[in-house]
Length: 482
Image 1 (cartoon, helix red, strand yellow):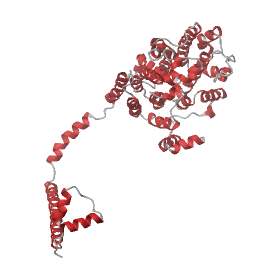
Image 2 (image 1 turned 180 degrees about the vertical axis):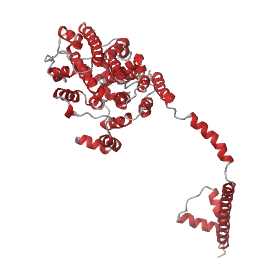
Image 3 (image 1 turned 60 degrees about the vertical axis):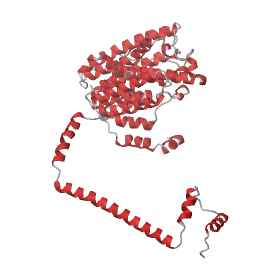
Image 4 (image 1 turned 90 degrees about the vertical axis):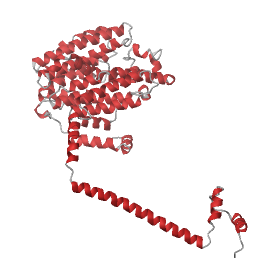
């Protein structure tokens, strides 16, 4: 923790408390035992830590039945994604790698050292033979699922890479954007669902609802695309669809110029709206997960995504740097998201309301965003009503009965207490009145001129007169008695 972190958490004690609570009290549902693993599998988990700390943490707490298959599934897709992102690879080399990667996963001893030197996950491909070695030990039914998803994803990535090479820079239509997110993330949701159901740790009905599976991936990917706009643009990549950004600026680079800041914020709210439309389906999906570790694995990224949407919504910093939720916020979200669906719904409600609060009538998407936020809240209310109808009915039925059975002695005592208070007030007011009359009478007997005081007050003279004015008053009203 650096000096800036110390200063930050000094003024954000609640976030510091969340970090301490998570590190102190969080108990994994299942714990991995590295001592019982072969060296090649431990190396795979080391790569998992290096490629993604957030996903690594939740993967390593999964049920033993799915721990290794999902860890290797993630590394395989990360390897595929590394090839797709590598701008140094020519298309004639990249295309066959992407399309045949599902075959490579079972090829003994395969590795690849042709990635650019600056690729973050280059080393994973260099030592990919450890992944293939462990992957061949996975149950055939799980390998069939993972291979099918890897094949579809590789083909989709290859198609988009070809489009970019043909001069079609970036994504044009919202339909293309949805298709891209489907290939890189929606398919992951489908594959994971099949693994969950096949292992018996999820409701089999989820397998039949592909739109829910797809929404899980699309919600995460679209949120990441919004958050990473500056980083992607610096890498000469554009994933925001032209169909959306062209409504606000003429050129995509205008989004980063200060003179177009309001247009850029309106454009980002349009992107947030596109992502937010998947939120209620993600909650519906989570209701079908039966095992706690699987629920945690799916719920935490979704809760992080809705928090990220609230952070980037109408945030000018989005176009200046890569912004993320703080570690303290992340720990609080993980604490809330590893309990049950109702707590996850509360997290969604909290951040959706934050989006709604930041929404402004100046935004052309104001009404649509308000409706999208209301849709999420309405869904949450439908499964977890804030007012339980049965409880309200029981309370209504109990109230007349309680009134009917009230103790007569309590009624009498309450009535007497009321009159005692009234009598006390009368006595106090009467005493004050008598004392006031006595004091005024004594003042009058002592020679107080109430007529002079009344006349001066009627003329609006409320302050104490100075010495000259006082002398004048004395001369004016002096009757010579003394």
